[in-house]
Length: 145
Image (tube, rainbow, N blue to C red; front, side, top):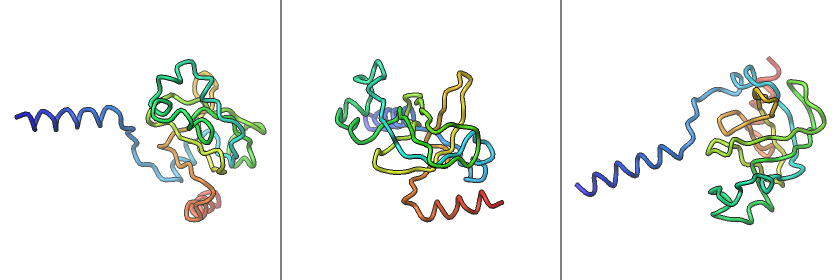
């Protein structure tokens, strides 16, 4: 009986912290995105979040702020869709769905603008590092349609 209770508790715990994405192809994300941009991380701004000390990422490794983050200022290298300037700030929801940016990489970002005018993205979109030749080739096919 105790084992069954443990399994139920574990299942409920995992489902409550996981991010639930409904699969959409890169083409579907392209159509629904407000903006699609090639970017480089300019600055990680997670430390500006008033409750940063209470986040799971910070409690597991406070040094993560030196190399990666969720709240970022991005230099836009090229705009493929939407009307954005030379830089955009991604405001996270501070949830398990937030996209984690590595400061040393360039990305293709699919995003949307929320009702407050904030630029947003998350792991459910077709974001990818430009290190991925496969994803880059797939992207080229999408924009060539």
